[in-house]
Each structure stands twice: as structure tokens, then as C-alpha cells.
Length: 289
Image (cartoon, rainbow, N blue to C red; front, side, top):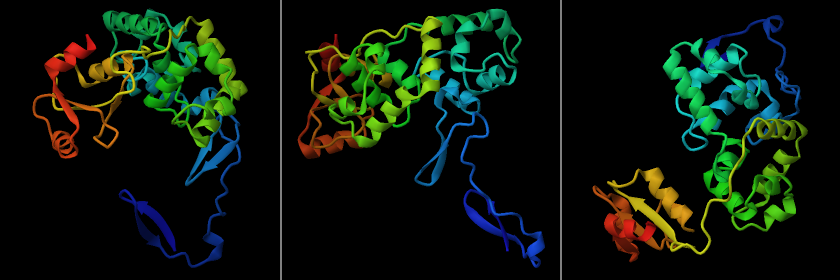
């Protein structure tokens, strides 16, 4: 039988194969990436290229992630623009982003002089990123925003982080063997090392750790619920973390405080059920300013 994937996951029988001569050769998973020739590594159900920053096939996704709001927040550099930059050969590696001129950006579909200059300005402004955001922007496997903040707080500078090893990483609370292995492998990879050097030589200068030691929210786990008038959700989280706290997405036994905005939902009910302290937006503003 010949089977194909129909819809999302449902297998569909396409035809009955009567003769063995019509059967295709068995599929063999390549041992090396067809794009960059790096080794392919099996992780669970997935086979992944280990080429990291040096793999051209990963470039559009990496560039889009690098420019995302949660990372370096380069406005107007989304998937569509990233595709054009890569397809036209303007960017062959991440560091090429900082060698683009406004005139080149004007040639992209959907761009004119003003929008090209705005994108170029946003790219330049991303050269002085906060350390935790730069770490997150690199798309290191197993490293999300929270782990990036832990690393920024622990190491303080990007140079110190690059010199880390598995044993040192394992001493950081919340970092286990799998995450430690992933981070250590990323910085040990020669291709990644060369590309990181190119980024730094292009003027990227990550600045400082993120959290303020001994801040008023140090060690506190805080949950936000409802809408705040004075902050976006992301701004409120950054305020909490800059003052030593941890912004959590759910109420648990470890929650110290719930900030309640308008139209609060189930998190407020859960806080009351657990007896967790709640404060309104006015009190939150007093704490973070």
C-alpha cells in the first residue's frame, strides 16, 4: 500500500502497489545536513542539524527570531522581509544584518525610502541589546527567555558566558543536565564561535545583566492577571524582573503575590482559593517606581 499524510495527521491510502518493482527505495535519514554538511542529531522524534548559526537553511528562522519583539525587537523585520533578505543574497549569515545599507533595503518589496531608513535605524539600535535579550536572540536550544535571564544575571557579561562549561552551568539553580549540555555545546561549536565573533566585530555590544540585586521584589514570584492601564503585559514583567522578582504565568504554592488588573480571570480565583496576597495596579506602581 502507498500511504500519504492527509490533512494534519490522518494517513490516507493512495493506492495498492502490486509489483515490488514499483516500490521506492527505502528512505535513509541523511547523517549530515544537506545545507551545511554538519552532523544530524536525533532528539526524540526529530532529526536536527547541529550547524547552529552557520547553517544557511536555518537562516530565515534564526533571523526572524533574532529580530522578534521578545529578542532584539527590530521593527518591520518579520518572516517576509527575512525571506527577501536571504533569497536576494543580502544576508548569508546573521552578522550580515549589520552590513546592510538603507539603499539595499529600498529594493525590497513593500519598502520605500522612509520605511527602509526606519528599518535600518532599528537594526542599528539593536547593536546595544540587553544581555538577556541577546542570549535569547541567539536561539540556543533549550534556552528560553527565563533561562536567558538566569544566565545574564549569573555571568553579567557575554564574554564571561562564552567561557562557561557544563560543570559551572550545572551549579545554577533551574539548569539541569540537558540545558547545561545544550548551552555548553553551543559555545563550544567552532561555527557558532566564528559567527559570534562576527556579530561582536560588527558592533553588537550586549550590555550588563538584567536584574537589580537586592531590589524590592527580590526573590518574589509574581503573577499578573487582567489588564493594566499603565503597562503592557511585557513591560510589567520586565519591571518585576528588573527589580529581582520572577514573573510567573500561573498561580501555585510558590506564588508570593498576584497583581490584579481589570477583567481579571481565573488566576484571581485561584489566588483567593490559595490565600495568596493580591494587590491592585496602583499598589503595583508604587512597588516598581
